[in-house]
Length: 251
Image 1 (cartoon, helix red, strand yellow):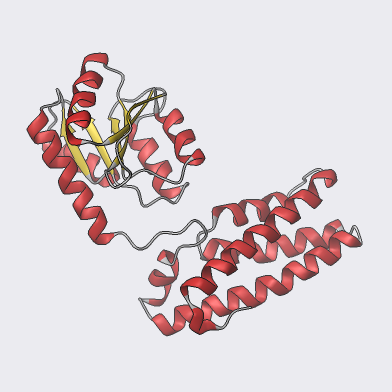
Image 2 (image 1 turned 120 degrees about the vertical axis):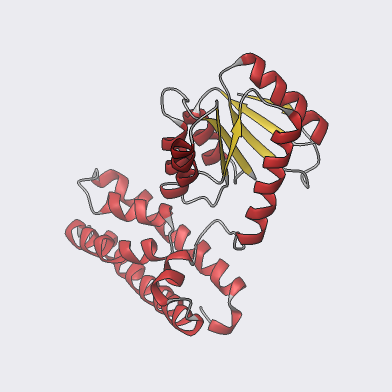
């Protein structure tokens, strides 16, 4: 992985997966001219690792036939498994309309190769502008997407669910800590199983993942560290909710 241009942070950060050296060089020159912050990855797996290690990018561009995992699969993983509202552009050769529809099912845009500066810049600008218009304010700890869908956008209902989340998980974490003190691992598994849907509801993957581990046949020596991490993650979520919704009077 290499960083090719480090422009000011108010310019777009673009993550690129492109195996063709000449096409990569063309895109690099376009990025330099546009003052984009460009990170080039060898494949989609390296791109996912970069996204895991960094907050996010503004745009992800990946070739249709990326290897060992296709651009469609990588785009799907980023949106559904990582839960990132990251716009994706698929790069490809000349394709029929039916195939183009498939691309757009996974991504926000298409760039035809070979890269041509004018059309490439236009597609990227349009995609970035659209993503700014529709993207909700982001934070690292929760999302209201599922709750909005569940409630049909009923803000009062969403606020009530957030209060229930905060109070119930806080109470259950106290029980979890008590179970650890007593080395009651069956109780720990039951509690973790019970609160996993709460983290899932706000799309917090870390909390959900820790609960899944605690609910499995995890080594008992790992349990204290996992519970410590879960407590910390909840504290961060609650702090963010207090900051975003002071009217809820969360504790």
